[in-house]
Each structure stands twice: as C-alpha cells, then as structure tokens.
Length: 206
Image (cartoon, rainbow, N blue to C red):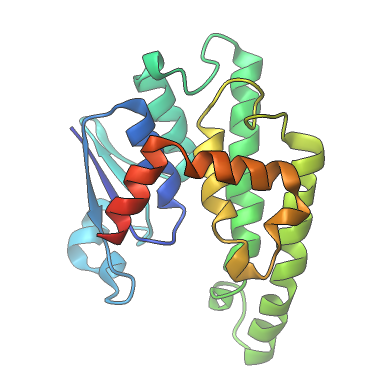
C-alpha cells in the first residue's frame, strides 16, 4: 500500500494521477496549506522539507515529483508509463520532467513564493509581474521543441503527461492563454477526458 500526501492546486496532482493510471493500491491524504499542515510536527517527521508531495512506500518516503514518477513507472511496468527498456528514451522522459520541475515550476512559484528568493516588497511585485512572460515562454518552448504529439513523448502515454497536465492547470491563474499553444491545449483536453484524471479531480473536490 502506497500513501500519497498532497494538497490541492499543487504539483502533487501529477503523482496522484499517475498512481491512478498505474492501477496502484494507494491512499491519499490531503494537507491544508491554509492551516499550515505541511509544517506540522507529524508531517515534518514524514517530509522535513515541509512540502508536497510525499509518497510513503514500503522502503521509505520519496519526495520530488520526477523521482516519484520514475519510481511508479518502474514499480508498475505493466502500465507502460515510461520506455523502461531503452536507456536513452527513459532519460528523455527524465529530462522533460526535470525541466518542468526545475524551470517551469520555479517560474510559476515566483507569483506567490517570492519570500524564498527576496525580502523586499518591490522584489515580490517584480517577480510576480514576470510570471506571465516566463510561463508563456516555457510553454512555447515545450510546444515547439519538446512536445512530440499526440502525447508528450509521441504515441505512448507516459508519466510526462500527468506532469504537463498538472502545470497546464496553472496557466489561467498565471495569465497565460493555453490556446496560444494549440498542441498543449489539445493535450489538456484529452487528459481531462481520461478516466483516471476525472476520478482524481473529483476526489480532490470532495
């Protein structure tokens, strides 16, 4: 039994969807950022970073979305969520997910997490003002140079797809028009139609 700790509106959605796509036996526990549960003593004992997601396995706790997605792809090979038999192709999956984690997510975080990088209110405003530009640039690059279609890596659905979908859900709030990247807009719609995605999104609203 796997256990996912998540919060709504966060990158944990990618792992949540992947657990469902993999057919995993899992439970999901929602944390309230409003109540600062991510910094509670109980949760910090699980993830000292005080962030989500955290995935509890029979061998210990995993954090960081790319690591969790790679783990699930390998633990549930029958789900065919990554090209596990080709080292280079698997590395390309890792490369794409690392870009989402290290660049796209960080750009988004400048909107409301400016205190991680600065102390002046003027700096916070400046970072927030840049978010539409930097996020649009990231998604333009993905659309033009990374996205193969119809799924991120081509014909095969992989762990890249729930991750891209997750960050795509942030675009409207970041004042970015997803329709400016039509392939990603189409991907978002097809992801929304998948049973696993619909189930997870409904569970998060419950």
